[in-house]
Length: 139
Image 1 (tube, rainbow, N blue to C red):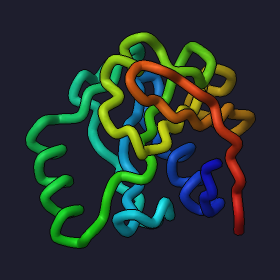
Image 2: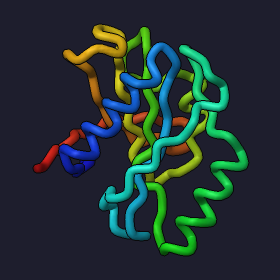
Image 3: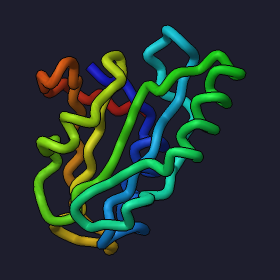
């Protein structure tokens, strides 16, 4: 189960809406070994694509160095889908390399960049196996 604060959910949804029609992506870091998402880190989709996301390799290297210095790890790795449901694609699954991370997808297919309904789901992806998990949002 992913336990996450409402403010972090709002930040992911806002990022997804702001980057629409391209996919948005980012990380929420937390203390190593804690499974507690705390620090929201929006990233730039280097692919600048409505159907694919890619972290810039230089930005990602800097982020991992920063997390190491802060004794943090990626608790949530998120991205948006702009025209499809919030479910990992084959590409998403093949790129999933953090077995302890929660992979969160936000779908903006209904409202695009506007306010309104969105879909948010969380998954564990380990060795190509996808399992959906409950999301518990707290104030």
